[in-house]
Length: 95
Image (cartoon, rainbow, N blue to C red; front, side, top):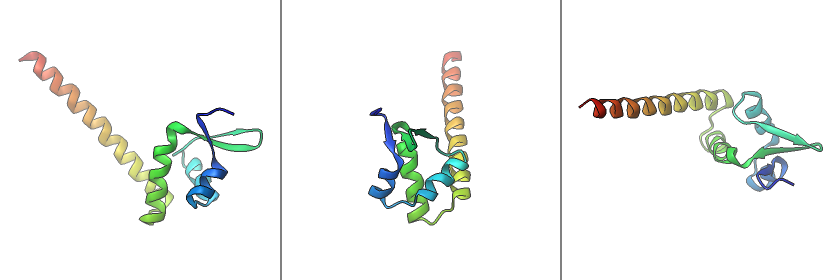
């Protein structure tokens, strides 16, 4: 087994998460699931996002559509912060 893959079934049991929630996240394109020998896996690099989505869904009662909107807004904020950093650097270079 690939040590960088986490079995979804085990993640759900350990974190008390409904497997349907994970499927909904995949359907919205928020996570990517790999299927190997009839077992569903998520790559470890997506784990921080999955944990965040689980908290938003179960602790804050934000539905999957809301999670998608929040994720898109956070991505835009990250893009804008990178652009600001790039512009600051350009400004420093011209002074």
